Image (cartoon, rainbow, N blue to C red):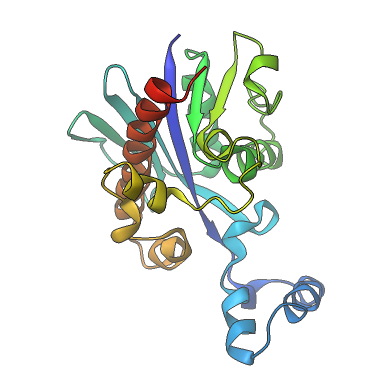
Amino acid sequence: MNKLVFDIETAGEKFEDLDETSKELLDQRFKKRAQTEEELELFRTQLSFYPETSKIVAIGMLNPDTEKGTALYLAEKAGEAIQEKGIEYQPITSEKELLEKFWQIALSYEEFITFNGRGFDLPVLMVRSAVNGIRPAKNLMHNRYLSYQPTSVVHIDLFDQLSFYGARYNALGLHFWARAFGINSPKEELSGEKVTEYFYRGKRLEIAKYCMNDVFATAELYKKWDKYLRF
């Protein structure tokens, strides 16, 4: 199968820019969890985790067999693509164009590999595509279980596989799986919580490179799973 490992990064809206009703509704949710004003402020900066209050600012993709890939990222202005270690970093000036390019690329692949894609990346991709008036080219949320997925569209969520479809309810994140298998962890350089800050500071290419580091780690983890745990 033609394989594609991918990951997305999102940046949230600024809480202070929301309408008053949205602020009030979000605060009702956050105050149920926040025990201090500091925690409440922290929740207000984490709007990147909701597709309703965020946008996709980078999508990293890699073919694990050829080790060639593309990173699409939301740039402040149009520019030339940058080639670096087999990866083409393409600046895109709108989320809609970024998503259109992703789905166009996705048409050439049958097997898609993510880490926690079912829990985050895919729902966000599908919803943000709809928000931008785009119909996803493939249904990557077809079925959770590999044996029930169509051979033409297979989505392997490594978090789901390594937690054995939730049997290990306390399974940890990508950093710990990378550490366990001796893979370089991208989380030592940046984390998803800081992407919004980087985005508004104009550090867009840095976000794309961080996204690709997540993809590289996921690709290496996939190879371990495919060799030792795939049945």
